[in-house]
Image 1 (cartoon, one colour):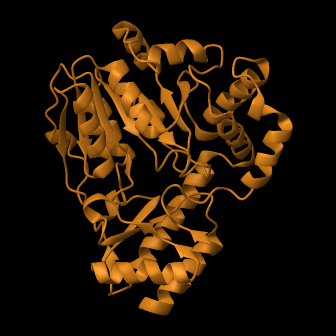
Image 2 (cartoon, helix red, strand yellow; image 1 turned 180 degrees about the vertical axis):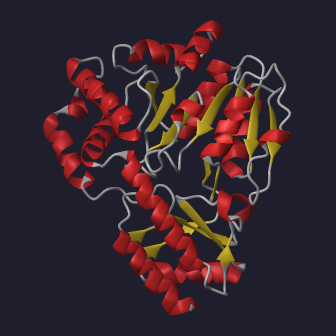
Length: 353
């Protein structure tokens, strides 16, 4: 089965052998307060910073998912409100969840074919956290490094948190331009679901200590205190942490992966622009995602496309949110091989050319 679903997506084939190695290594039954786990955690943190180009003074934490990160950040870094900027379902869901915890939280939507309107934002001075999704998986858009820099420059005194679930470990993100970045691992990391990584600036940890919000078990202050000893607040997903270590050891540096995905994304967009039965959902080249390609057509065509693809052992991603019935999404993740995309192209050329 060729899997182009944008998460959980294809895992690296080497993961099969790594899982056996994890069993033989003993990490599956190692105490998470013991030296065996601490050594794994210490090694992994170094690999993450080096291979993903994360600043050395940023702190790395592990959670179960990106959606858990939403909760941890709202609980730990806001007493009153956050401000959310979104153009798709996942950014909007983050905003909705924040309002359940902090009813004063605010949000603003922008069009999927337009860049984030940084100059038009009206974020009040009492906002404690600005939140957005760098790569909106639901519709195949992304926020450019230039836009993130402009946001950073305009709101220097406010913490900025970025959901990078469909881009971290795939794109060479400029981590220094925001305070918090987080992602689940079932996309560009090429790993099984059930683990997320969060990178936090020194300033964000300082603010968390100032606020002192420790009413919840996985609060940022407690996570920070435990990670000083390379430990987690909770019993961690030891298997996935081991798998991440092995994958990162074998992968090239993020600059090379970014180059590969950028070139492949351009090729995919150029390829899909030639068809008449369907069109690319995102028309503006400047805001198209490099890691998730969204194709739009009539519902009948989309249903037929998914069934035909599955008949040929090709799994396309369902649409999501407002685009659930009239789009398919195609992942452009590092674990998927170039030859698999060539097979995907042959499928489309056979049925839709």
